Length: 185
Image (cartoon, rainbow, N blue to C red):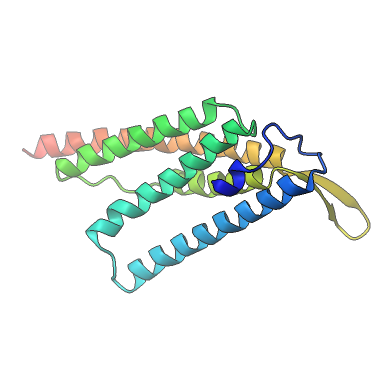
């Protein structure tokens, strides 16, 4: 967040300002390292049975906090509209509340595929917005300018589609599981 906070607010993605480009690059590297270590931590915990109650609580909380912090920072830098973090936060609070209610009743709502797609597109979108600037990419005989801000924005929009779909699936799953439990009483 500190690296992004040093970037120029409202910078045009085609702006050749080298300092903000460097800061955005290093922020992206730190974020990518955090994402990789988060993945490895989860993989080790699952595959070597090293998971803990604290880890199962803190890991998703830390994931949500870093995503929300990035989105808020992107609004401050004029890299995304304010409605995006508001919608993402509303979804996370809703799904977390549903899962907490289910757990308090001894019910389990399984993670659905839409939530996994949401996360994948969201992380790629965040990286695109973090890189922000336009860079030429050579394909051998042709060079194409990639505007990472535009790519990141549309990946986040796509993640919102999966986000809303998976939130609906969580709600539907909660209603079904709660009804089944009520019927068995």
